[in-house]
Figure (cartoon, rainbow, N blue to C red):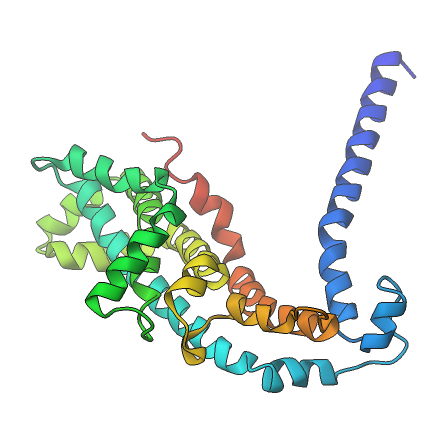
Length: 279
């Protein structure tokens, strides 16, 4: 075996070993949380890594019912559903207009929208809190939806505008010649072609909304409007913490994220890379 071939095989083996170690490091914390959520409190305190000797499914009941996770689920689901729907609709309409039409101040408007990606959003938390208190928007069921939509719009507009630019404009022209309106062309021709980018937008907007913590902590105080990330803090105490029930609650909070990801994961890379190379 030549030295070059030996070095190539050694490099490939080292790379594969590194990837296996990296994969285990990423997967093990999730596996640990899942089986730790099935331990009793005493078992967990004695050995946090050991597998459970008896399955404590009551932890999930305590988390969902006694810990009021069901209530936080409803609030988080409402925020995520409304935010994702509105963001997709607004972003697609704005992206289509920016990609297909040439009008005055088009570049300025596009730059203004994309500049929102550069703003440290949590720096707006205090001004938003003061404005919401002043205008009576504080601690309502829709309080979190308003900033969530505004904050999540720039990136979807950027992704969808880039994707629509890759779709040949001749499709629009052919539809116009056949008598189709702009609305028909946008919704029946261009929209189906944008499914990969829209799937990416759905996943990103859902994850950001579902996992958001600072705004949910500051802008709402009513238990009925609190979200899952804030609700998880209820399992921490000043002197003690119910770790096994907390982990059960964390597992429950992960399930919707996994469901959305598995539903759209095939389109993630395709949607993120669309528009990188334009004709």
